[in-house]
Image (cartoon, rainbow, N blue to C red; front, top):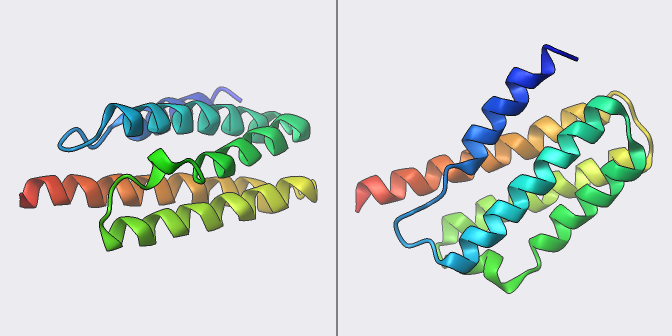
Length: 128
């Protein structure tokens, strides 16, 4: 379990990086909520807390339906968002099946989708 905390801290740092150039306060709030649910989800994965895992993965998915989520109107952002939503759905499905192998893999995929999108947004800011 101790080896998991550096991963949590690193992931938290990565996910807390926001798209400052053009990010609205509403989108910032949604991203903060996403980070909180992602952290709780990671804790649930590590502890095999299936109820919490299902609840928080469902909340992550619900968050992507919030109109503030799609405030950025870039086609590439839409593709990243769709990939994130699919990864969250896969995580929720693995959690509902209580799959000890697929669940951590699905969580890693969710985290990677976050990082990919944040890197894309950072490149967009640099390009401007």
